Length: 197
Image (cartoon, rainbow, N blue to C red):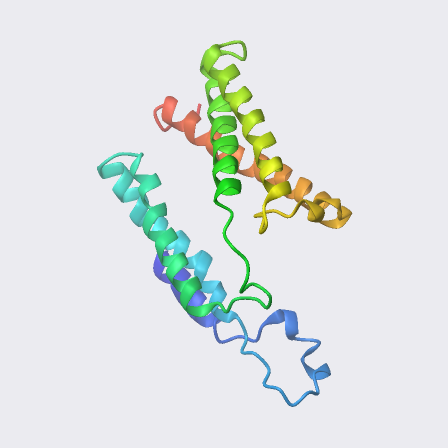
């Protein structure tokens, strides 16, 4: 089955980019037209195929090993980005935003921990209350850091654009539903011994 997925991906890389199928004739400028991005079809196919390897590792060692997979994937993505993506114009004078990153990490980690602990411990338990209070404080610190930073991670002016803020809310709800379902279903299968009842 995995072989078939990889063969399908190989076939897709030779096709024309469908987003340019009807508009490619409109470009009459002498500049070269970029090559189709058919190689992007390899990404989900490779991810699904490597899932078999990840499943074998987690079954043989521990399910916690799934989190270790993010480290080499993140390093590879960082290396490929540094190597192949040019900096956008005007980015030369920009700095990083370590305070914004730190406060965002604290807020999101505390919120996640509080929501996870609410199931077994109840909403009135101290780990949940502490997690939610820390998350709220971290979110407030993040907003303040973005307000005063020279090169903010998330410029607050962007949130005043209805298209961006509305799209972000919709995307958040979609991701909460999708990834929440995956998370809850994996916990259900683990607690039920791997057999749905």
